[in-house]
Length: 323
Ligand code: NAP
Image: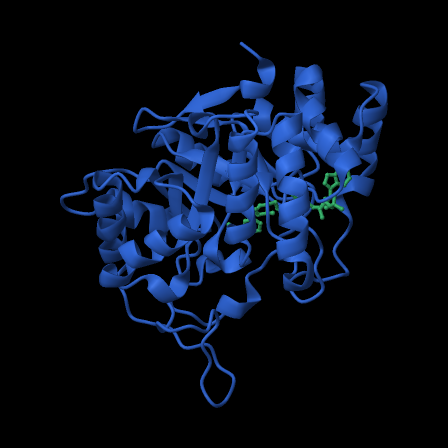
């Protein structure tokens, strides 16, 4: 098998490529850059593309995928495309229309994976972050299990092959897993995960329930000012990571990516830079020794770059729990 096509089996029988191309960028560049760099990522070998309604560039990614199908680089079935249900569409009757909107933008008949972006139901409407007159986020009182049932219906309708969640803590996962009449378990939980936040407890929990952990921010996030505390240490400058990279004649970025793959985590990497996109697909060209893996385990500091500050105070804010 072409190592670039390395995949893991999900609990519903479908397969997910272990390396995925992230597509989030700040709004001022998100559309333009997605259109330029997504086709390039497909050309160099990325087959898993991570999108979301909230990134506001699904239309450009749809165009990119279509262009690579049209020129014969890939077939639809070669691409694993994820989209995410935004929090303002958690009421069950809004779930399918939200997915249909993403499908229309992506120019696809189905996505491979549809996930709840955060466990934070928000007031329905056009605003991504609805706020009251005091600037306070307006939560919506939707039971996450009811949203999940609507996702199950989307899977049954063939609009998505698999369904999962993102940014859920283990109690929120348990709530879905213990739901009376559960038809499908979440196939994945997509969360921030890197050597400074290695999520070992959540990973063990997910593995014990057949749920794949998908890592975002694997290089320490994009450090976007409005989301990330700029005082946090820069992951890719970590001395242990740099020493392991030097020893293996690789970059710290590749070491951080491979660390996830070797511990059974599916890893996303965003790059809108051709040199770095090409570099990132080289992750399959080397191996980390058990000693390297152990040393990287040892640098965990529980640094969460993406604290989801907008959700603090929401009754379902996920990070009040240890994991
Ligand atoms: P990331 O993948 O950790 O990337 C961080 C930065 O690393 C990028 O800005 C990129 O800059 C740079 N980079 C990429 N390759 C590199 C390399 N080889 N060497 C050095 N630097 C490199 O950050 P992320 O965007 O936060 O996470 C990845 C994806 O996960 C997102 O794009 C999105 O699809 C998803 N995500 C999901 C959630 C969620 O709530 N579910 C949250 C955040 C992200 P350049 O572009 O300049 O290369």
